[in-house]
Length: 150
Image 1 (tube, rainbow, N blue to C red):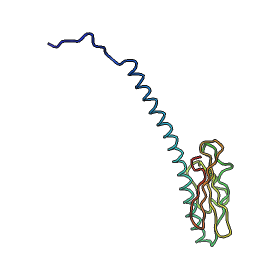
Image 2 (image 1 turned 60 degrees about the vertical axis):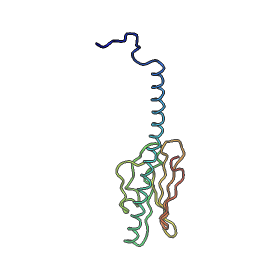
Image 3 (image 1 turned 120 degrees about the vertical axis):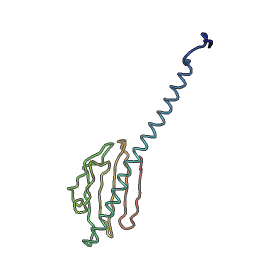
Image 4 (image 1 turned 180 degrees about the horizontal axis):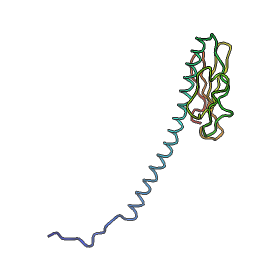
């Protein structure tokens, strides 16, 4: 037969439980901050990809019409920490065929220059008043970014 130990303590001590709870708290704090950063980085992809679409649409428009076309601001104001509807009825967007699905985190605009255009996206992802600005030069097709993740 097996001998049963009656004096052996069962379960966890208070120190062991406190250690496990502290470890879980630390891991959740790290995961939460990483998650917020990943969400902001993911939202900046909207600006990058839509500016590339605008660049391709401008080149196609130039090929067909011999000139570039300006795009009026796509939202009434710069979105601050939330999405706003893209006004594809504003001047230039319908002609370019730019129509994002759903609301956007950035205000888009295309301005004409003497030899091309500049497409830009401006937004405030976290609503702190600091805006990020993406500019795509239509002559060189280069993208410059200011305060990408604010």
